[in-house]
Image (cartoon, helix red, strand yellow):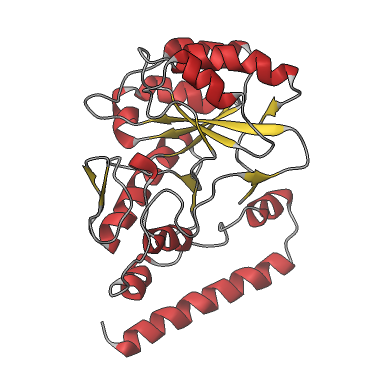
Length: 279
């Protein structure tokens, strides 16, 4: 792409943004206010501009805590967030129905990060969860890959290998969720929760926040119920717990059941991640 074309795209993008800002000054509907109060939702940068912007940028970081990854939220209350991944794939498309029943019975608001492959295997249940206000539906990727611009791997899983693949891993499942629910997810957690800082910035340009955790709740659904309980009861205000809702044979469900009454006794309440000040 020529420098002239790149400059034209950038100028067009800035002009569109300026128009949106002027429009906002004259429109104060509740819907407009809510949309513009959510971080990173002002606009999506055109894909072609993102490809140009990052095609030669090389990352320097790799891991779960790279620059730009959100791990907790700011609060003055005794609040924590339980988040559950549904990973999909040959060994990840099951459903922990006992855990879902418990969350519903105890009225525990939760945030579910759901992978495209899990949605395909459990479409009816996914739509039921999406209509239940207890559950905030967010994006766990299209192919459950670590988010990388150069193909780095984590836990034996190959990551996305280019800027184009990063965009596809994020956007394809976001669009699937929107088509099925009518709502656009704005939070993302990758398969393995690994990223480089360039991929995180690409997601931000797409209007998406990367969310990881402060509490490793079940270690990829490998913890015993006692380990899950012990992890959760260490919670501090603003913590985000990472758990799984797709492994019914794991200790996750029983561990959550044991931990919730203890956390209630400590004065904690549970919140979803939307409208939280993520840090």
